[in-house]
Amino acid sequence: MPRSVAEIDSFITMLRVACEDQKINSQLERILSMPDSNRRSFIHTWISDLLIAKAPKDFIAAIACLADDQVAEKAYEVIFKCRRGDRL
Image (cartoon, helix red, strand yellow):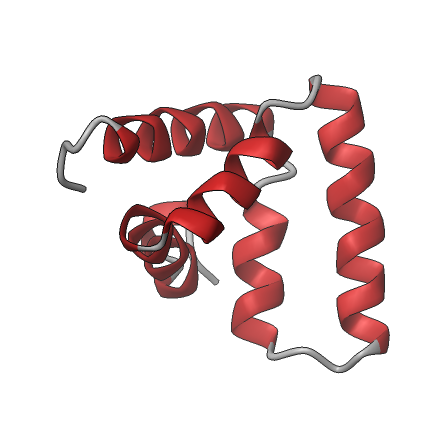
């Protein structure tokens, strides 16, 4: 069991993809800019939908990380830096 999101490869991959793909970056930014309670509710519903759809477990794990307020805040900072052209 990973001790931090830094150990969840799919989460790191998701952030890297968001830095390289403007569409993914915009989608993540929309989710991460929601008020915390709205974001957590959205993520919870999305995870339920992903489980029903039998989405890959790694992808579900990456999305689940965004339910944590501190993780979401840091992820937002990362994708914002990518938008400015900074590297991950």
